[in-house]
Image (cartoon, rainbow, N blue to C red; front, side):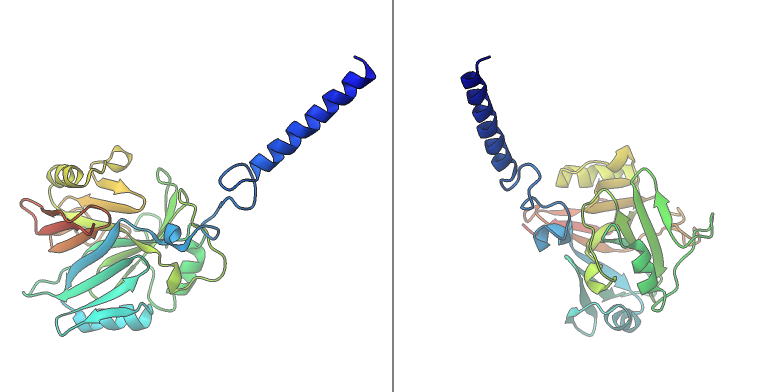
Length: 272
């Protein structure tokens, strides 16, 4: 190769390298700082989105529930009356309505929290309410290997089994201490009854799938219907047996359709 040819080859290489470097730093490509990599870099709505926009549950302890969620946990009350109140938990509103009979309703529901904050969430909860312990291990947290998620549980005054779950499959890590703003949205609601029937109706209405091919879970990490058979003990204590109580679930982004679950007191509707 001549000296002139060598110079031309080097100039070509440098031009191509410079163009490639510029291309890699365009938004959405390569490794430039403009490409979001964690929930802190993304728009707030990406970190707070949830499939469940609203949950309506019954309670026999309305006043105690209001005090617990608004004062003990510090969640804002956005609506209230003599028969009900609604609190805002990140991207979900949670409504409790006074039970009309002598029943003592209880449910299981879970809130997603930043995937790196389970330990801080436990520290935040301990002065506010006791953590529930796994009846098998005695630990106050569980690791779900198949889901790559850690969770901790507590009871509210009505005996609901409430869960904070850190799903490591979601890029929603945040810095700082845990606070009420880290309760991102409700990501699980337990519906008790016929697993097969409920699953088929929900999948048909919403176009969702079984999670990890399990008949007990329908949806995804942003919103899971936990379909428990009657009498199945709820984790982690495995003491309270799953029972049927009325519930309404409003699902984000599914038009105005409404599903009345056959044979069960559940209503599922979209909010467009």
